[in-house]
Length: 193
Image 1: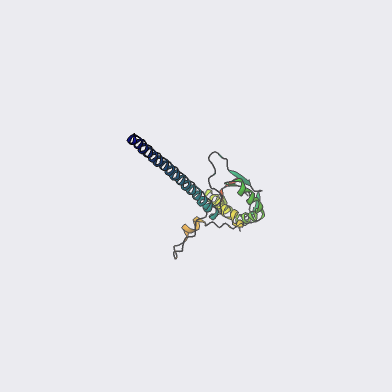
Image 2: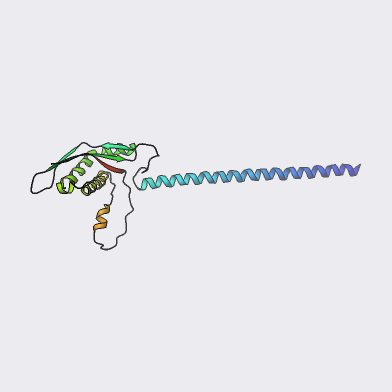
């Protein structure tokens, strides 16, 4: 009987060791899964912070809103200006609407409206009727208005046409390309007389 009791005791100890090993293995798997999940959440949070930081650096909201979301339009009051023609007095009446990426930026744009209107008037008043009557002239005017519309907010956009046409002088370090929050300039009226 002594041997039978010793055998039962040894079996109980062996079963206890197996249970202990299984419990330790389960705890170890759970700890590893928790650490893995924590690392994944930190990685996603870091990626989201990087995207926010990139948007703040360019001073622009997300350039492309969610698909299916209509753009926001900011209409400006019509402009009537004397043109820079020297031989005859000519004027232009131009209606401009700015397309922006989001409504928040549209509200910011409205706060700077007197300065924006001034900049657009200055651009228009330096144009001649010959420049404004061509398609290329209208496209160039749209680019200039797009650049001048964001200038009062401290956003400087390089004019691509000037860089291409200019004779290559010394190579300068390129400035960081800033994407304009104004995505497009649309003309609602365009009369030159």
